[in-house]
Length: 259
Length: 283
Image (cartoon, rainbow over all chains, first blue to last red; front, top):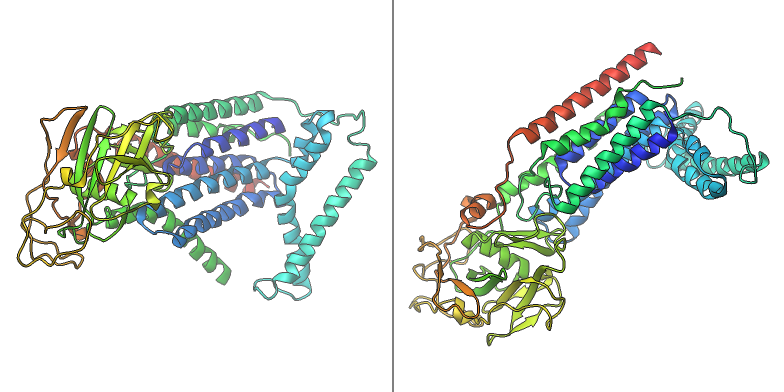
């Protein structure tokens, strides 16, 4: 699918998550992301990023909740912090899905020539997670061959130092190679441009529509997007909004193009 | 293997925290008036712009926060309320205000916060009610309207603590407590101790009755001694809020919505797993 479709999908799914702290909607959005990830993940190290971001999201949520314990602790403030953390976690899951289903450098090719440099920076930033995940795996394998099993705090430097070094080297190599190939200075040909397929258009359009529905619902205070935590009440659910989030999973039913 | 167990434990804790947070509310109920039968009282005036209600709230402590006073009025009188921003702002009182999480969504209309000056006047609150300390004998006012400061925002009707909290018959066994205008002891429960949970004998239920004086606004006043609610039997906030007249539409916690959401989660989850298994088998 066209990388533009994935950018649109991820941005809109992120907007949906951003507009609500209702756990019902957030859980359905995670399920939708999982389905899209399952159908479209690119085999390879980047495929791990869904799981990594899911765990990272859970840690974020725990930390956000734990911060409450520095202030007044009651059910209301704990619930408020947990829901805020859950929203952040779901945004991370959406981002993890995006990382797992598309190639960040495909995104780079979309940028107009004059915005090439900011786009390169953005692509590097977007790809930092999958690249780090891949290099952690490589370093672990290499260290295991040397007899160092990285699973304790004491052996952590044996993992972290090479990973950071590799990351720096990779970024330099990438920038140099792109420079050598004349990126960002004048004409460049496009090798096998990816066309917008009907699946890509449908993905982008449903995602935009879903985000629109949630933005409107948020502006009008509909659908209990922010359930009351003080007094603590069981969150209400609008079936129409659940249906809207299910529509976000639509790219999952399209067949994956390419290898 | 050990790593798997550790991961599973981490996940379990995370899920338990996510699911457990709402469940805590069932245990907590609301801020319990631990010793509501004491004479420590403060007045709360809620002016929706069309009518003002006053509540004589038993504090149960020498000092509570401005938002705690609202929670106590909810527990004792069923005052409808909703706080936002993690309990730092007031979204809705007495059925008027914002239902979402952004308490200032209806700006320029919002709940203006006033402190009584002791002689019926009001001073504009400069900080969040969560950071303000209410002492026995204080008067707190909330007014729904426009205006960003003391000169432009409307005030609640002038009120003193004596207007709202009736003097109680002094009890021979009562030891005087040096609270502001509180004075007297809880009617009907002179032997109530200060220990939490040891509520006195039941007192007449709270009533909110309209009064004759209608100037400048329709004025309603709650005068009875509040019924102490022991924390163990405290009713959940929803049922109390439902007893109050005007309020938000009742929460439909059941119904099709949650079922649809559950079905969607299970359906998408299972479908995703099947797709992954099929793709792994194919490669």
